[in-house]
Structures are given as structure tokens and as C-alpha cells.
Length: 350
Image 1: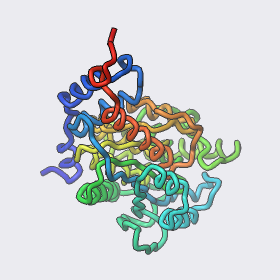
Image 2: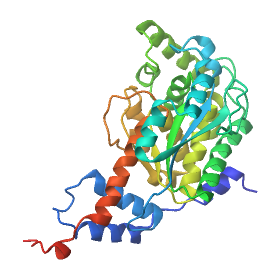
Image 3: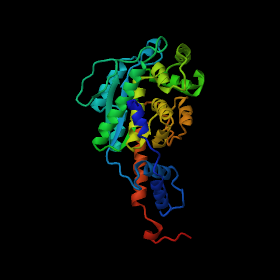
């Protein structure tokens, strides 16, 4: 009998090649040299293949911000205390964070999900999917049980399914969790074989001493658990995070429902790597928004086979880079719908 996660994976199909061909044909009729709009044309073709529509309109867009705490913060790997996680969740819900500002500018909604915050949070706009109050300290024991990791993934799937029922068709991934760059770096090492010195970045802005300590913490976690890269759920459970697992579910759920997913920075890309290892077909539904300042981010994108659209020197998380790219997706759609063809404009091709 298939698990719920396996059923979701089974529901993910390849892109619709006929729709891609129709989009390509239309792009080639527009008043421009072929391919001259570069990545905007790539987006137009990709979203056509994802949705099956030549000119899809994304009227309702959501950035899903998954929030969870990390037991590894006990090791002193962050410049900020763990208490910041619940405080920032309340900031998201009040509309005061950077992602809220950029989402308003892009005409998108911020959906904040508590999948593992180490606090009792209540707010009418908060989506509560708490699996447990933070992960365990991964240098001493597994961050999660396998069952907890699976529940966190399914929490993300359920959030997407609820939003799809409400008419949302375009998603972005966001995160909040002090300590989550340590978990993401660990996942990058375990799933690609990259050494800690190349995977670990400075997160919230740690100094050289703490950065070297953080590398040692990641190395210790890898040695303690020796997670097997072939068993992706085992890796996620032992050294991952609840919010990372939740984002895996967001990606898988969106792909199952034929919706594009714009991934944010380092944390979201770690989740994307896990998702694509679980369900290789899900990679075609992903749009990489920006290249983070985290040194391991480029390696994550390369492992997935993605190329970032923006280079903005950002390292905030929250979904900020992903929401910026909603504007580019809207721009690609407007090109498809509003730009004149050679025939309609009376422009000669030669």
C-alpha cells in the first residue's frame, strides 16, 4: 500500500509538450527576433507546459512561509537567538516583514504556516500544522523521526491543496527558522557529497570564528548520523528541519496540481533538492528566483539543474527573492497576451 507521500509523487506528471509547442509558436510570431527576450521566453514556455495553457493568467498568487525551530541552535550556530523565530512569525502575520512588502507589490498573499515553531502561537491568519516544537539537536540525535518528517511534508501538501481549492495557481516558497542554514548545509553535504567547508555559509551574518564552528557542527552531524543519500527521507529526518520538510510538501503538492513553484534562496533550494530526489519530475515545475549570498546556494541549484534569474546579493529568506520573480512571471504573461504579432502589426519579417 502506497503512503500518502508516494500517492502525491505518483500524481506528478511530465510537462505538456503540446502546450510548450503552442507557446513557442506564438513567441515566434511576435514582433521581435526569435529568442530575444531570453529568460522571459523560457518562463512563458515553462508555465505553458506546467499549466497546459498557452497564455495562463495567475490571478491568485501565494508565498507559503513555513516556520520551524531547530534544536541545533543549542550549538551556537546563529547570530540571532531562537526566540526570533516566533517573533518573526508574528511580524509576518502583522504584515511588517520584507516578504509582506514585496508580496503586496507583486499582488500576492503571504500564507504563514507553523509547522514546528517552539512556542504556542495563536493568530487568526496563522495556519497551524505543528508537528512538534522544533527539531531535536541533530549533533546529538536525529532531528526528527521519519514519521515526523513525513507529517511535515504532508502538512505542506495540505496547505497547497487548500490554496488550490481557493483558486491559487502560482506559488512561492518562503522560510523562517533560526538555525535553518545549518540544517540546509547539512542536507547539501549529505545529498551531494560536498564538504562542509564549501557548503556552510554565514547565515544571519556570523563572524569568522562562528563560521568555522558552524562548519564543525555540520561535519559532526554528518559523522554522527552518516545519513544514506539514497534514502532521502532518512537524510531529511536526521539532519533536516520541519519547515524544510514542509516546503518539500509545498513543491510536491504544487507539482501534483499543475502549478508553478518559484523557489527562494538557500533554504528553499535545500527543500527543492529533497523534493526532486523524491520526485524527479517535480524539477520541471520549479523556477529558481535568485542566487543567494550563501556560498552553497549555487551548488544546490546546480544539483537540481536550475539557473537563477536574479543576482541581487540577497540572503534574507522569507520568500523575498521568490516574490520578486512573480513580477517577471507576470511580465512574461503580458508579453504573450499583449505584444503584437508580425501579421497584426504589419511588420515585415525580412
